Amino acid sequence: MRLFFASDFHIEHREGRRATRAMADWLEMHATASDVLILGGDHGHEDEAILECLEMFQKFDGQVLALAGNHDVWGEPDLSSERRLHRLWNLFESFEYHPLGAEPVVVDGVGFVGCMGWYDYSFRDPALDVPMEVYRDKRLPWTDEPVWRDARFVRWPYSDEEMTERQASELARHLQQLGEVDEIVAAFHHVPTRILLRPDVLPEGVPRRVLMPRRWMVLNTFLGSQRFADVLIDESDRIDLALCGHIHLARRAVEGGITFVSNGSDHERKELVVYDGGHLKRKRFGADGDVETSAE
Ligand SMILES: [Fe+2]
Image: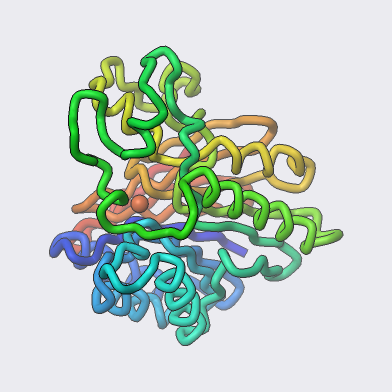
């Protein structure tokens, strides 16, 4: 089995749509029935775009597993994000894509778990001394209005902390549900460990941001939660790999015996992470169908 992971399609952007199409065409040509493709969320934020993105991967020969991203649950005021999430899972099923957030799955003896993930402010940097209410308002300490756009477009009936906890508990339950399966891959939209955000602890060869603007030091808080790594590390004897999207940065780091890998798709180029026989490769597709491949 080869495992493919792609995310952050944001199909509304013209270049991104063409790059996603190039990736889907490549997969149609090269994937076999024994391969697995995980779609890691942020297909788009409009219904039509999400549908168009899902349609592109319909000819993938193997099993497709799909996750929602935060943009996928952005919505009109009369439809809660929870309703949107469930509607999305139904849409995945209509394509015969397995909704990974709803249920784990086993393919050829390998277990797959995952969820959209969320944030509970566990990524905040205490040294910045930003009051919790600033994070709850999704603004910066020096702005009055929210700057993180989930504040405008996401409507959960829970706080961010509750939303994170609900999903982390569900993840733990799904791991239990996999019983005796001893090889498990986890996938998320949001970032499941802060190690992927901290250049100071990243291994050699990973791009480091020497200077990070203060704005981003605050906004990092909304990129994910350490809670998900905690759940995985409890079961690290049977989990080797955890994948995520959302940050548009290609990174890899090891924590608690688990390799965490983020997808580096940006608005112009779309990245396909390829995991084959323990080896990691990244293929970056451009709008003109050009492909760059790198091995890690
Ligand atoms: Fe996202």
